[in-house]
Structures are given as structure tokens and as C-alpha cells.
Length: 135
Image 1 (tube, rainbow, N blue to C red):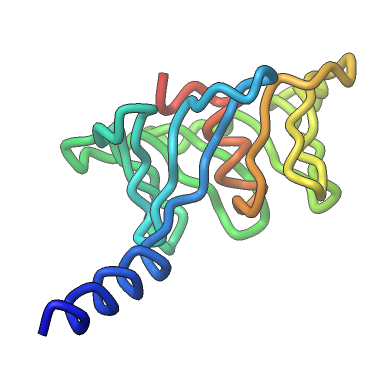
Image 2 (image 1 turned 180 degrees about the vertical axis):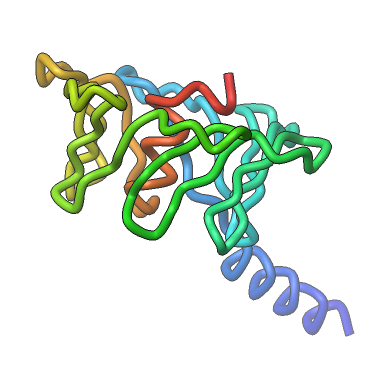
């Protein structure tokens, strides 16, 4: 019986593994779980990203939305910026804020690495690093 519980725990750990956001020194900033829960480095819930792009705070109050075309809006649906298909992140005036690279590296407009979001959807990484939803 103990072996069965160990195997089930291992399967659960593998399938529920969170992806991690780190700073340029590889220090953990936060995590995104497979269910869209965003946690800080201590695994305390700080928000959620729903499958439809809705971004909520820890109390499930809507604070923004990432549309399917990459447009990022606040709770009043005012455009904050855009996440382009190539990973470029721009503000509402189309000024480049930074990039989410294919390898998970997040860089500012000067191409200085500010963090990593390996295996995280680029829209979610942009919401975490550039649009202050979870700070």
C-alpha cells in the first residue's frame, strides 16, 4: 500500500509541476501552476490566469485580460500593450518594453536579460514581467 501511495504522489508531483519565473541571477520570483495559479517565490497565491486570458488577483477579482491576439488590457479594458507573435512586448504607444525569447529568456528593450520564464507561454511571461499585474 505504501508503494502505491508513493507512486501516486510521484505522478501527482509530475503532472502538477509549476513553471518558474526567475530573475537574471536565477533567483525564483514566482511560479505558474498548470491550473493558471500564479504564486510568489514562497508559493503564496498572488493571482490567476484563466484559460480565456482573464487575469485575477488572489481574491479572484479581475485585474486584466490577455486577448487571443496578444492585446493586454486592464480591468476597465483600457489597452496597456501588446505581446507580438515574435515575443516582442510593446506598450499602448507601441514603444518596445522588451522581449520574451523562444528559449524562455526575458530581456528589456536594451536586450539585457531581466529574467527567465522557460516553458511559460510568452503572454503569461509578459504579464508577469512587463505589466505589473503581480507586483
